[in-house]
Length: 79
Image (cartoon, rainbow, N blue to C red):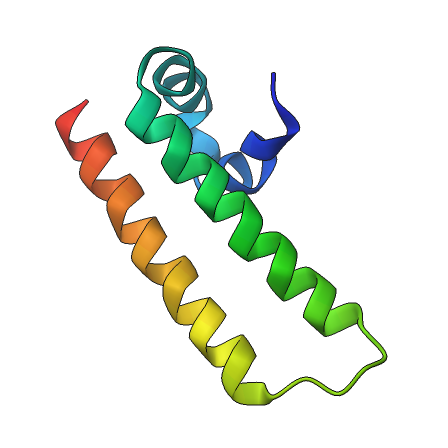
């Protein structure tokens, strides 16, 4: 399965099969996974970067990640 699902599966390990099924069959869920992956990667890169990054940037990205997690919970509640 797509490596972009790894951060989502790590966040929701008990939903792995459902995540894969929704990813294959629901384009909106697919986009949500892509967004989550991109934000998680950006946080990871900022943390590992030698350049100085604003802590407010990371705070904003974490807030966005949390909002995306809320959207996943909505999907899981409706699945």
